[in-house]
Length: 86
Image 1 (cartoon, rainbow, N blue to C red):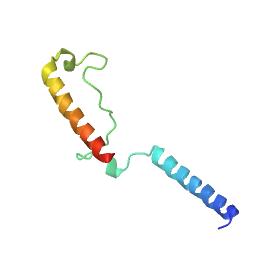
Image 2 (tube, rainbow, N blue to C red):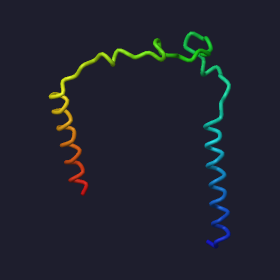
Image 3 (tube, rainbow, N blue to C red):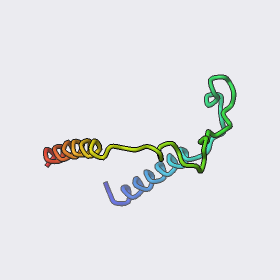
Image 4 (cartoon, one colour):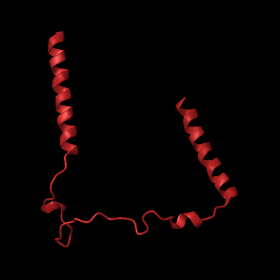
């Protein structure tokens, strides 16, 4: 293949890829398929119950010894996988 033909093919590929990305990112109007099971159009975006406030996870406590054991086991398996991979 000559150089000019390859440049045109690359340019064509870039244009096709750009069009695919633009098509995927474009906002589409709701259609019949995007309606809820009850037949109502979904217009409200779900929001957290306590937006801006701290959640229940803040009050949780953990066991550092148990966490260290779980971490060590996970690290051991990752190290073994890396050793096999070379």
